[in-house]
Image (cartoon, rainbow, N blue to C red):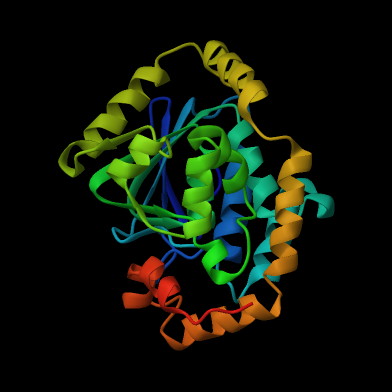
Length: 279
């Protein structure tokens, strides 16, 4: 790797690249993270880069809690640099992540909610700490549908009923339930997670690059949503995130400490259930 990043630390071991997100105080997906991710994906698109990439977080409590709702235009502008103004969305950026010519693995500790969960869903595989991982799509509880891939991926992975449950309830899923539903590949005991992921990454890293990438491309052709579907979800999110109901519920969350390191973020699903109903 030749680039340096503000919010991502990288290290290469053979054919396996480790990429660790570190955007204090709680790893919100904001313009700095998106800018770095655009640059990293550009590097990963080159034919001489790693065969396997393992993503994790430096923060044990938060992988990505969600986007920074105070900087939606800013991070959207950064996302547009990956594909142009017509594709100015996290959904299309994450779709590009799904298509990079490398195997991508998410190693989850802490909370991955909203676009954080959608980042994981865009990766090829997801392995989570049995004791210390939480997944959620809280958008409907805030006032919008998910806009960066969750509707597409969760419907394919979980089936209609469970996808509706996951998205419409805005509830937290622990690793065991997420594994049972198909949200993640496996829930692995915390003490074994690092070794397990390192082992599977190293194993694939020894396989011929052409076979890995051709097989991934063939499965993507069957399973990935079309760009049109991704763009439609992004447009609906962009529309409703500005609605009065969303603004009212978001304002109440900020009064309670939203986007700071405290109980509201740690227990966001419970907080959403306590908010006053808004039509």
